[in-house]
Image 1 (tube, helix red, strand yellow):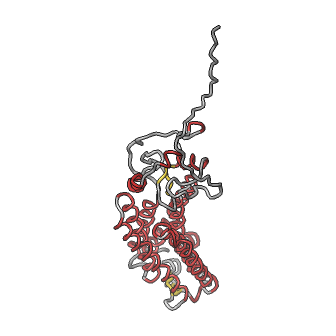
Image 2: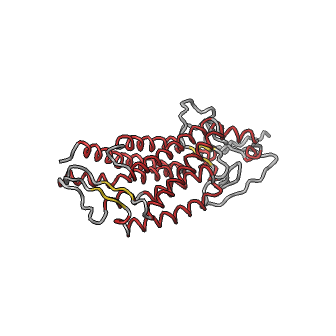
Image 3: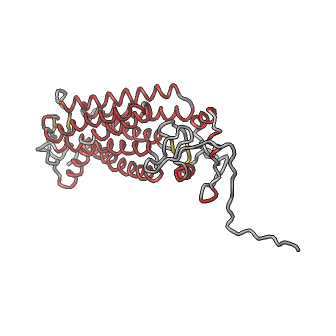
Length: 352
């Protein structure tokens, strides 16, 4: 029969796994629907991070149904717990590089991918030599515990991953927040806090006795997912109505290319600072789009309309949809706006 510590350990692990999986999946679906890249990366990172507690969750459910701990003769507990560390680290690196050093993103992500493929090989094919397993004295009374062997290659790679997340996403995010203002600063602070908490919880869970820091670790993990979501979501909390409503469907597309040519550096700066759409100048109330090259804000309506027109950012000319051709903008001195009426014009009669 499970002890009090066993119940608390199992229940908190199950809440993180099932709750985190459901929330991350919903956020992932929303991010794909609205084409919000940062939200998608954050959702994937949060999903794999929550699955790091799959080992204790499976052991807990096994005890509930059979009265005995799961079969760990081949180190399955450790594999279920830490095989998710690699994809979580890769998506964490992608998130950090996308926000802080986008010009070096490809190199950093490739290096992280190679490093974590090696980690997966060690975890899958050399599981027993990666962990110390602590079996409960009375089967079914407590959960199994797994701790990394400090001299194992898997632990070294995990340590490198955590250090990269700590310095790039955590410290780097705080430095970026210090140099920013407004909503951008708030987002970097939330992202940095989530990454620092993730590293702290990872170290505690990998090296410490689960009974001593159980409540703190599980509570912090919930805050980690919450802060990460707030930081990467593309939703403005401003409840005010948009200053300007713009219709962009069909022949009512009224954005002239001359407007793009007249953009000033001040307008671009205000768009980034106040998080308003560079096209319609409205405060975005729903999901928006951030250009990955110049970080300019667009609302989804304007992005969809521009994608079907020139398919290029108004500031840096980066494509909105890489699968579609880009129509380079050529500034024109004067452009006439023609509104097509659905009703044919009546011909005037000529008086004789």
